Length: 84
Image (cartoon, rainbow, N blue to C red; front, side, top):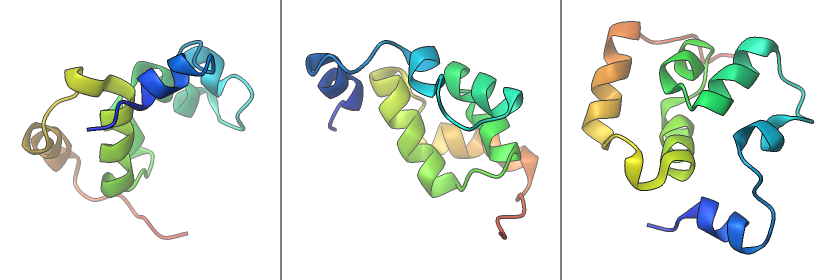
C-alpha cells in the first residue's frame, strides 16, 4: 500500500498532524480527533466509513488496525446520519 506520509515527508510537506490541520476550518472536536487519528470520534461526528478507513490507513500506515478490527470498533456506535 502507498504510504502517503512517506510521500509528504519526502516532499518536505509533512510537519505532523497538528501542523497539517492548523489552518483548516474545523471545530475543536474535529481538530482533536484528526490529530489523534481517533476514528471512533470521527465516525460519531459523521465521517463516512469508506473515507474514514482510507484516512486511518494513510494516517497510521502499518500501525493502523486491519479492516475487520476497525469495523468491529465502529459497530457498537451504530450508523450516524450521513445525510447533508
